[in-house]
Image (cartoon, rainbow, N blue to C red; front, top):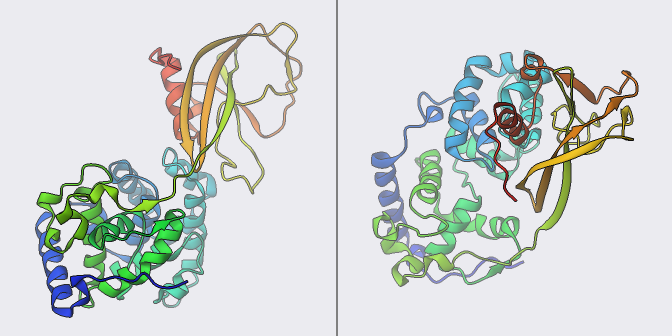
Length: 356
C-alpha cells in the first residue's frame, strides 16, 4: 500500500517548525486542567489512556480521581481482586479495559525496569499502537506520534486528504506515517496532547471552530471553508438487535444475570436477564412493558424492551451461579453495567420514563 501523497506547505521544514510552534504555544495557554496532567507519572498516564479509550473526558474525570484513591499505583492495583477492579470500573463500559489494566499491573510488579519503546509496550495486555505511542511519548519522552480518530480528523482536514477510507482503523494506519512526520522531537508528549486537545476543543466533528484554530493558516480545508467534508469515510451500516429485559422481583429481591464464560467481555458484570431462567414457572406469568431503551455498542444498535413480570412462581431455589437475587443493599455490592444500573435506579425511584 502506497503512502498518502501530499502537496502541502508543511513539507517545508521551516513551515512545519512554525506549525509546531503555533500549536504548542496555543496548548501552553489553553490546555484544560486535567488531573493526569498534574504531576504526571507513568502510572497516571497508563490509567488515563486506558480510561479515555472511546470515552469522553467529562465521563472519565470522576472515575480517574476515585481510581487513584483506591489504586494509587501498580502494586495496589495488582494486589486487588478482579471483582474489586471491575466494581471500581462500573459504569465506564468496555470492561475488558479494566481486566487488561489489572493484568498489566501484575506484569508491572515483575519489572526491574519499565518498557521503553512502543514495540515493547504493545506486547502488554490491552495496549495497541495508540496507547503505546501515548505512554512512551507522554510519560517517557519518546518521539512517537499518536494517531486515533481525533488525529485522523485533524490531519485529514489540514491536508484535505481526498482518499475515502474503508473505516476508522484503516484511516489511522494510512495517516500514522503523516502524523509521525510532524512530531515535535523536543516535546513529543506535549505535541501529542496538543493535537488531541485541538481535536477535542476546536476541530470538532461537526461545526469546527476554524476561526479560532491556532493552525488555521496551515489547514487546507479550514481555509477553503469545507472542513466538515473531512475525513472521508465509507458509511457502514450497523446491525440491529432487539432484546427483552425481564424485571423479576420476589420478596423484595431483584433477579440479576451475568455470563460466567470468561470469553464474554461482560463476564462478571450483572444485567437484567434477557431470557426467563428455567427455575421460573412460566404458566401464569404476565408482563407489562414499561419502555424501550436504545444504545449502540460497536457496530450493533441494541433495542432493549424492559418487561415487568408478574404472577410467576419460583419452581426451585437452586440456580446456576450466573443468577443472583439481590436486595436494596446487596445490589450495591455487585458490578452492574452502567445502563442497567441507571435503569434499575430509575425504575426503583419512579423516574423511569417510557419512550420508544
